[in-house]
Length: 306
Ligand SMILES: NC(=O)C1=CN([C@@H]2O[C@H](COP(=O)(O)OP(=O)(O)OC[C@H]3O[C@@H](n4cnc5c(N)ncnc54)[C@H](OP(=O)(O)O)[C@@H]3O)[C@@H](O)[C@H]2O)C=CC1
Ligand SMILES: CC(C)(CO)C(=O)C(=O)O
Image 1 (cartoon, rainbow, N blue to C red):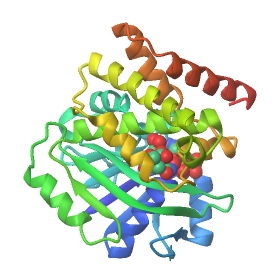
Image 2 (image 1 turned 180 degrees about the vertical axis):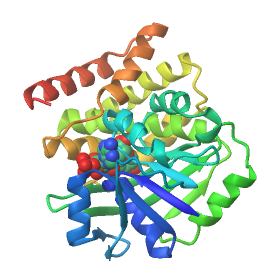
Image 3 (image 1 turned 60 degrees about the horizontal axis):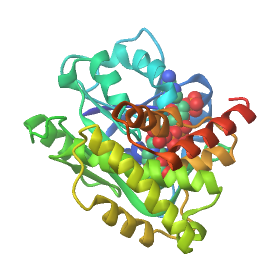
Image 4 (image 1 turned 30 degrees about the vertical axis):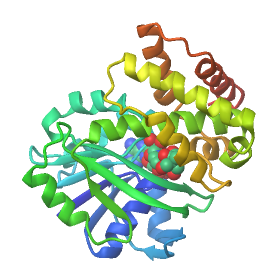
């Protein structure tokens, strides 16, 4: 199966590397500077699951029209529009597109850009970043991709992709409820990234005080109410479940948004917290803490000139 990965950053580089390690036919669609880096140094991964260096196949945006069976989308949300244009020459009517971005708003954009039938739901759990040398640093036990048909059917093509993804060091799991899993991840990440970026702290020092835990719980509740009002398919008891997941995280755990802020990089404030605020306004839900967090992220963007 021919797999194209849009972007060779923290997520794309890590999971693409794991697929290459198993022997899958992987190509990265990257921009010129990243291509030069990958040609010179290779794809360097430093991971709690084992370090590795690969010599990946790369392509840059081009008129060439080599077809691929599967395309994994791993840009940030603010680069997605360009990314969709870049993958167009590599997509046929049989190509399956699997986005791994956090959030949900991008699904509408991708499904209307291509045919909705070509677009699976998808997301991932991994704590990784790219350092100044372009190396992928993957720092905690979780490394899972979850994907599936948008309507939840377990089709033949989904099983074929599951087969191609199986047997790597990372987990690639086929889901029959990907919409619900994506909303759950959205609830988790918009809370975790909101709180850790507001407090400029990994989760431990926030979670380990009563006040901090209360703020985490409040933010979860504001977002849960918003999602429910918007008709999102979230499960009963999801906040309690996600509070337990927060309790289990290593005290040093950080969201990718906080790591991006520490690097002075762009953040997905509009895509994550901003979209939730639009929904909250649309459905008349009070979200004071979410509003404060979004305003804080906007101040960061203004001050860092991004
Ligand atoms: N990092 C993490 O731990 C996790 C991140 N996520 C989510 O995954 C998504 C990706 O995040 P992450 O991997 O951290 O982001 P990164 O910034 O590390 O990687 C994104 C990559 O996409 C590349 N890119 C952007 N536009 C294009 C384009 N037009 N053509 C080719 N390549 C392009 C960038 O290239 P260039 O180098 O040229 O800028 C960059 O290398 C986000 O939605 C994030 O929220 C989800 C779970 C965990
Ligand atoms: C919470 C985490 C690390 C889980 O994958 C994540 O999605 C992120 O920080 O963007």
